[in-house]
Length: 200
Image (cartoon, rainbow, N blue to C red):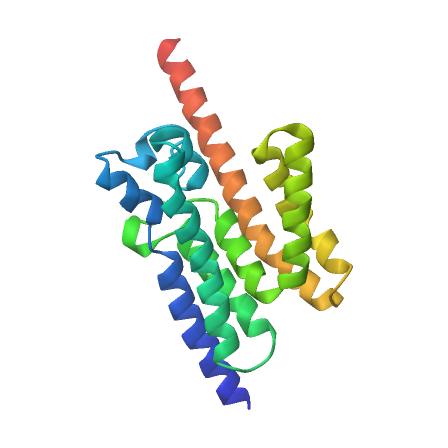
């Protein structure tokens, strides 16, 4: 049993990381002659693609980034073993998205990859979160706010339906998102401080 679980984890990690490493936003940008990591907020993800390339061009980025997490979760479930192997797959995909081997380890913040994973691992809480996203979007008329409320409130929603262990696993996944946001903020502060020093 232990050997089977270890093999499932190893395969899931490898496949999940490689799936996450597919730089969808970068590839879409290249088809339009744009390096998505050099425009806008330089984040190779859906939001920057939408702002820099347009809503229609960003659709494949949205679908692709969600699919990476969903497929990684599905791989973990299909290989068998404990329930948490699926979470390991999503974690690997999120790490791959954040530090992609196919794009010089310069990746995004893994939010949509997380969303894709939750659609597979926690479908009922995910549907409730989607409804929350719609309601908040309608109330504020801003999809960005609705999406943030749904994503960052997801553990609270999940806690209503699933055991604490699964909610804790979700929290661990979200720490990857938090790390990427913190790193982006730090890099922005350094860039701002460097620019100020040059002007001074």
